Image (cartoon, rainbow, N blue to C red; front, top):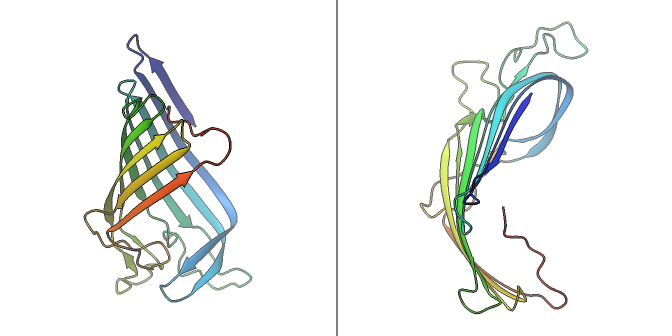
Length: 212
């Protein structure tokens, strides 16, 4: 089930909102899982998935854009018995590992053409991300503590293109607060990093669309 709102006012400010709710039972859900040392595929015979997501996009002005999206989901093992046996399933009705219940992202961008010449384009971008704490294993016992901690990260980047996109330089600062981030395979990701990328288009014009 989904709802969509899309409106542009007289000042050309456009607001787009999309909200969805979902409920499904899935057979043979195959998931790549890890414990920090090894990776492997796990096949869950019967899984119930329910949740909702929200996506918001807003052109504040012709040069400023903001966005936000969020997802809440619950994936539950609904296999009463261990497949091909008559043994009760110890993970019945428990949350499927490696799937956070709540996560959301947001971003803002300022873009302007002609700031450094008639055929130039400048973009200043910010991206934020939050993932709620979740587990990389079934919590069958109160003593089980297979926890991947929640994290909040921020990324800033600047992009400058010249000659209608023929030359582009991008500078990016990732995870500027140096937050510890563990992925859903229970493996640590890099902390604060900086990157500069230079690009030269040899043929044609830059087809990248900066509009939203």
